[in-house]
Length: 223
Image (cartoon, rainbow, N blue to C red; front, side):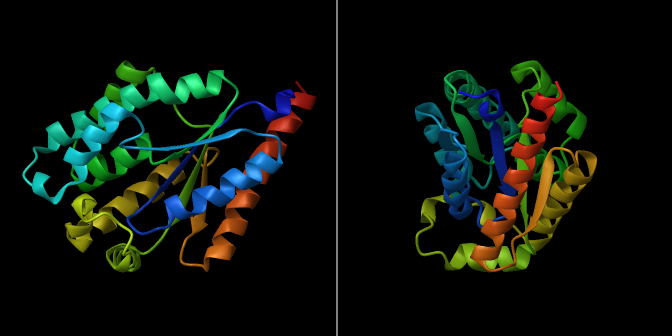
């Protein structure tokens, strides 16, 4: 495999209904055309154990879960996912596309739930050696629009609707958290207006991927 096609870890983030999952397929097809072997996964639930954790975290029946317990379940899911799926896939030469990752935890449990963000970062550093993506695509959308999309999605499992039932103020905090993270790490984030038609969103995703791949190739040529 040419060095310019070295495997990458790419994450998709955004509020409920922002279209992350739907747009990942277009990204995978583009990366494949550039010589990558894409591997699609998600959090929570990217492993057999993670699927069981996902059922707890996203079920409306878990509305009374303690905020710290919620955080630790996400971290447990991530530890299993990174160590048994993401890192092995990268080592095998696959480019990993993940629907949500650590930034989601900071946005949801930190900015929206109000848990100590420094402690969340410490957990990630200790448990996963601060393992972070090469690129994060943030599909930015007004949460009111996203929620209306999510609730109208007939294909969305009814038993995974706990976060859709949070107050709009909660989702506004999530969005603000995501945008703050993008401001902190502009070299890693590409913010994409997800209110555009799907074709336009996919074009912006491809443009962001192209820019990152070209930057990588240039760094290798001058390295």
